[in-house]
Image: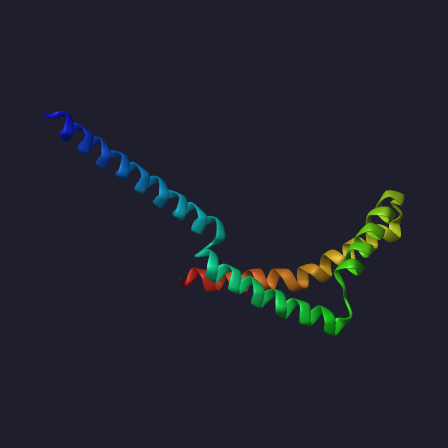
Length: 112
């Protein structure tokens, strides 16, 4: 095998390795996003718009949520029985929304 043939062979091997690395990188990005990045960004924008409209309709702001969270943490440190009851109530309220949504999503993902 001549030197030129060896160089051509090395070139094609390097090109193949680079193509495999790029393909793996693209697959890992899609796996991380759960699909193509463009479609995931569009979905996130749409969902953010819906959640933002819902929060605005209820008069909830992100700063208000953070304020409530910091007050909850402060009250947890004081650790009274009322705080435990309040956290339990929040847990039940959240579970009443989150668990059915999770269950529906699991059912729909099963049929894919």
